[in-house]
Length: 165
Image (cartoon, rainbow, N blue to C red; front, side, top):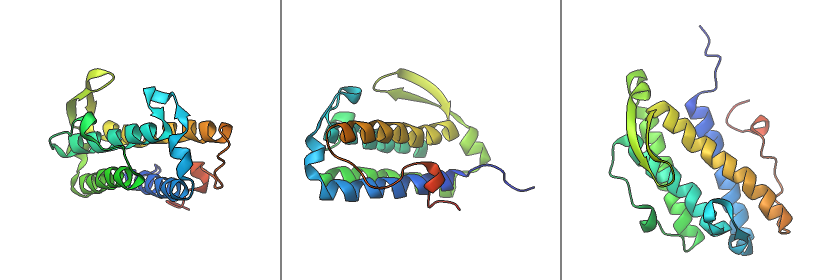
């Protein structure tokens, strides 16, 4: 039977491509990193990027059963620092997908979050959460930056995704 759903690999590829576009844009518009931002009490766009990438990293570590880095230990300084956090998270997520089977994906794990306390979720749900969490914040960021005079120049809807045709 044909797979009628979008695969986790397709969603991850779309996420990686979208984030790469953002990081290239920030490299050419560095002043945008210091735009005030009240999303998740981040203070600035730079702080929101830390939040996005910290969630990616910390949850990807949970998926792999690794020790989870403290939120406060994640660097927020330069765009390179932030990119490195995201890159490690993507390596973790790719590794998880390459090793996961159906039993792994459906295993319920317990996780301690910064904002919501102790939660229980399947590894599959946590994986999808990572991508949706980022996507939602990128959408908020698009509006915030446009209102601050920083317009991005590419379509962001999944329909335009390079992950699948």
